[in-house]
Length: 120
Image (spheres, rainbow, N blue to C red):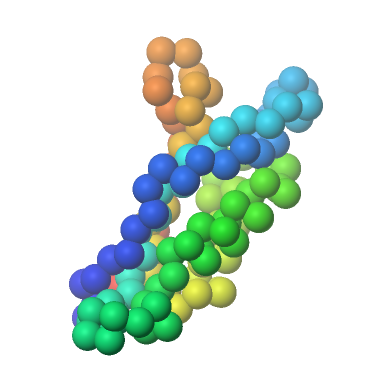
């Protein structure tokens, strides 16, 4: 069982998100935190980017997708982001937190946390 995790923390992206009419006319910030299961032992020995999960490539792909999206719900956006990572990168499991900062007065952020895939 792989216990290694590659993570991306507080990846802030501007997008159209929300259910209210005014939200459909502006962009808002969402923040992604990802933990992705990936065996890093080979990269640890080789010191070669080809042997690891390229977190820059994951980040760029998610930025491209999220910026172009226009979801109403953070749940839908999170599900699609998870699907992209699992389908396009050598990740078997991920923990994804999608936050919408400032969405609720009095809170720093609201959002969802999902886990997809298999840890084994």
